[in-house]
Length: 72
Image (cartoon, rainbow, N blue to C red; front, top):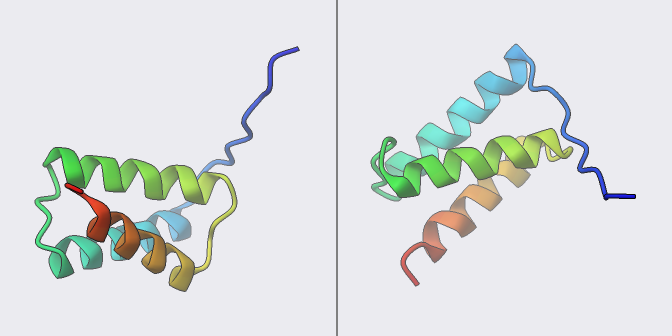
């Protein structure tokens, strides 16, 4: 039996939170939102929230780590 990954839907409040975290990370780390790095960051943040990571501070920390590690 294949392993199923559970992904919860993202509601409007969560979407607003994701947008804030994404915008802040892009500004702080000089990431163009429509660049491959920006798209990858957005995708990882959404998937992380769908898997249960919903605290702002933890999402910000994840975004910072991802932004700092790009290109290495």
